[in-house]
Image (spheres, rainbow, N blue to C red):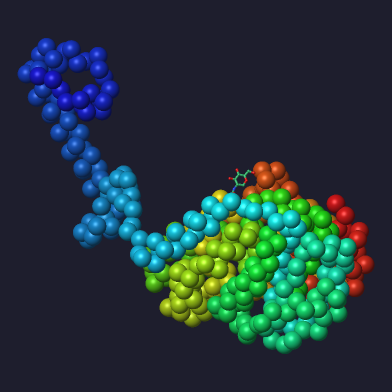
Length: 391
Ligand SMILES: *[C@@H]1O[C@H](CO)[C@@H](O)[C@H](O)[C@H]1NC(C)=O
Ligand SMILES: *[C@@H]1O[C@H](CO)[C@@H](O)[C@H](O)[C@H]1NC(C)=O
Ligand SMILES: *[C@@H]1O[C@H](CO)[C@@H](O)[C@H](O)[C@H]1NC(C)=O
């Protein structure tokens, strides 16, 4: 009698086969006995030392408890109509050949309550680079008074912004919608009224234009400031494993800006279910929507760190803000020399991950901009600008 093929493969001892074939009757019962014994030992073992993950399953018969689930190929979930439509759009946008305009520009988009206290510094940054940038200002509280000619006429229609609420994301989308109207804009930078440039214009322009990734901060945080903000109301489209956290201050390629414009499905999930106080969670859409969306649709198209530096090392509710007396060549040199980005989880483990900032595969300094700087710092920054920005 021939043994089944699968047995051959599982056992691997092909050289014993002739023996089995010659004396099938005498060897078989012994093998069966040994097999039964092994199965018994395995069963007793799992009963006495149940694997932790499945221990709850001895008290429930739910399908979640099927221990063989992990060994079987995952069954793809059937997409909803909205998901199927969204995926078609997103796939189409991602596969579009990029048409390089004659005069590619960077769109600098300022999200501010009113006037920009550091406008004079930005003027110095933009000086001499006409035609390679465009400026958009979303002032959510009062009409700004512009002191630099570069900024005159750059205000877009704005609306009230409440910190942590979806209106923050809406303002970002409004800026993108305005900036996308100029086909020359190829890279989009979100900045606040307390942001400063760390390098000269050419450096920033080349850094952003000569790469095809968006600098969107995105990491997995299992702690109370990360995944504890996730709610199952976001199912089925957004699973907990997809939920990401990251700083609001992004730069993005045109294809990603188009995806943000086209997306209504995931946006609506965040609008409805990621807000302060919902489901006794304090979820802030501006810290989760873009990192989650872009990690889901184009994980390798984003850098996972932000090019805007901020110092949280004081461990307070707000990041460190620099006053006039803090401004020194050494401080700015320190920030511009950082070439590793790090993330720390908000759970008890406080797991720190450090990664080199890879730009087109090469290790480069991480930061092009920094925050937060008080208005009073502007004169010192202007004085230092030409010396610290030369690289
Ligand atoms: C970015 O460019 C690199 C080569 O420079 C290429 O391998 C990669 O696929 C590109 N990524 C995207 C998202 O276009
Ligand atoms: C960013 O993180 C995602 C996982 O969240 C990963 O798939 C991707 O490769 C990362 N991108 C880079 C440039 O390392
Ligand atoms: C710059 O970095 C050095 C070394 O980490 C540190 O000792 C120094 O205090 C920093 N200076 C400023 C102004 O942050």
